[in-house]
Image (cartoon, rainbow, N blue to C red):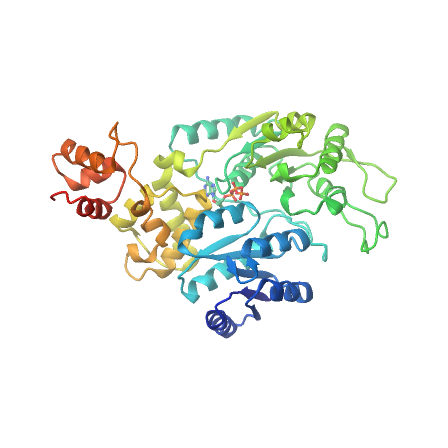
Length: 448
Ligand SMILES: Nc1ncnc2c1ncn2[C@@H]1O[C@H](COP(=O)(O)OP(=O)(O)OP(=O)(O)O)[C@@H](O)[C@H]1O
């Protein structure tokens, strides 16, 4: 596969501007303004990375994502989203997009995302391509911080307890909450830590080639099997196999997986010889597997086999006490990778971060911090470099649930009264920014 980039953007001038900028940085770029044109380019050149707008004249970025995930799962997709489309971007990430970038953005920001994605692609978990037999890689060891919230402390305790056992662990949580990091930490607490930790993205494996991916194949066993290939089970022998997005496995693949786990033996496709494997299994899912079991799409026996111990990772919104720790940690990481020395967030940014609901969880926080560090000139991250969806989250939010007041106006009045007309305190009580409070007071003609 090439290192080419395909930009899909219906604003032709903008697409060409990005192309010129990226080509000056030494990248090979093609541009398409339609979905149909883009699909032709993908079929003929198989780029490494696709950057697509969400709205296209003959379809959407989500269609492109689906097309790529079905046909070329190893191509990375990044979405360019408008301000109002963030929820869709988060949905896209759940469906396999690697990242999104909110418009308007500066070309340097896009370049940073591209470099990050291309770097991650080369170290990333084992995803499979129909075209090339990518070598199995160990994922690099990750830096892990525990957090100080009750939920974080409890989970850490569980990780330490279950780590040294051979129990299968099912890690559940929303996308970007750190499930893979938790899986790697469990591995690091086990006496398998010197052996391989093989991470497999089950959502990226087409079901037709899943058995060859898991169990390997011998040369000539099917068209395209030009060499013997080791499967993930063999690669993880004596170590840990991490199955991410396990709920995405087809029913047939679930049966094969269960058999391998029960018998502790696998047979590569086209071979007559069985191989013994000793693998500790950790799986992750961001969907409710019990629901899938009830609906009959996920095998109950496999579910129990995977779930000898389960961990529920809270969303970032549910662990806001940990936010400052992660901010500091990601800030330090960004400073060191971008060779900058940003000391912290300005008070406005701190406030905005606290109020925002972080639908993409830790991954979103890490990305937002990295981009902000890149764009910050002074010592503190100013409000104008953070994405609009974060800085103005509250402005669009209806004020709800403050005590039992019925209308927004009544809620504001009650909060003002309660705080002796101290606007900062009232805004805090209402969970909005001071600026929003002023706007709302003006709207309702409340004296300040
Ligand atoms: N405890 C932690 N300490 C430090 N960094 C973390 C921690 N948890 C997660 N991260 C960082 O947050 C990002 C998302 O984490 P990770 O990929 O593990 O999430 P995930 O839940 O597996 O996501 P997905 O469901 O999309 O596969 C990664 O860049 C990771 O390094």
